Amino acid sequence: MSAVLKPEQKFAVCDGNEAAALAVALSSVDMVAIYPITPQSSLVEYLAKFAAEGKLNAEIVDVEGEHSVLSVLHGAALAGARTYTATCGPGLAFMFEPYMRTPGMRMPLVMTIVTRDTLTPQSVWGGHQDAMSVREVGWIQMYCETVQEVLDTTIMAYKIAEHHGVMLPVNVCHDGNYLSYGTTRIELPDQAEVSAFLGTRDVNWHAALDPDRPMAIDPLTGGAGGPGPSLFVRYRKGQCSGMQNSLKIIEEVHAEWGRRFGRYHAPLVEQYQMDDADYALVTIGSMSGAAKDAVDEARNRGERVGLLKVKTFRPFPVQAIVRALGQVKAVGVVDRSVSFGWNCGPLYQDMLGALYHAPVKIAVMSFIGGLAGADMTTDHFSRVIERTAAMADGGASGETVWMNEHD
Image 1 (cartoon, helix red, strand yellow):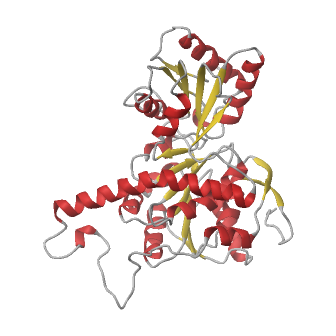
Image 2 (cartoon, helix red, strand yellow; image 1 turned 90 degrees about the horizontal axis):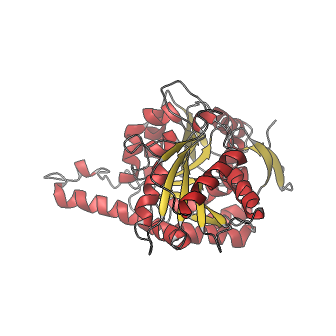
Image 3 (cartoon, helix red, strand yellow; image 1 turned 90 degrees about the vertical axis):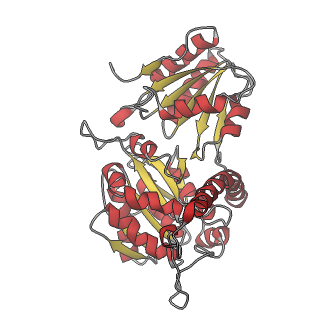
């Protein structure tokens, strides 16, 4: 049963996929292009249902595959439309060509990745491998811990993407299975309040397509003589500037959301029990809840452990991480994906780069768990805490620890 509410209702019970669809409806998008794939399928089914029922006033384009999904939305965004889609796993791989073009053309699309482990072995279960595999393409990436955060972040993503200092696409990532199908109670904001929060739509303020003003839309067709090296460098530099600008905008948008709606989410990183921590865990996504429970249990035993949850993964919030972890002795980084080139987790690899800037040398260890939908329980995180505490006491670091292998 749909959780779409009557105007006077404030709460719903729904899963993360429906929460994302509700957020899209509240964001008053103009066009949605869809192609279903597990565990994203129900999300686009909700969108189609909402449109059929008149609860989503947007054009739904049901295309023949994921490559066409983004290609259709490119045209819509260049004409000034607010757009949305969702995908995961092989669907994300199939759309890679237009996916790669989106940030270079500075199009502020919003797309949910309902994260899924990749092939092969065959898997349709949750993991971060798909989203992590495209982390360097130029999209902003934000990871959600709860169903409520899925709804709120999806709305905020439009205000971030369309900011004139950013103008870049945003991936809102929520975990397949655990959030896509996990059902809970959420609070829904009022439509008028969301519209006021997002403000006047201004999607393609710098170069909207206009039949009376023909123009090139790609640097390869930028005029006589081709783009030239300086033009290409200027494009790349502009993309990087937009990404770095987004760190401040993400913080500002989250702060405004909290003031307006009374729900505060950490914009870049969330510090949990970090005030006097000697060592810390670093997590990302829905497993952070179990990790917080394990930290609480360890605190009850007198252990001075904290947790840092990464919300914004791209651009990587280096300074926020250094401020949070700069004085701890050891860090255990828990990934739900693999960096094959380094035999560790990709979040771990980025943490090494960030902590290079810390005022002291910090021991860091990579933990990989939760692949292909495997549970990450408080017992798993208790083992992470134990190994990280040993590092803080002078134990060896640098080893990759694989969780779930013998569960």
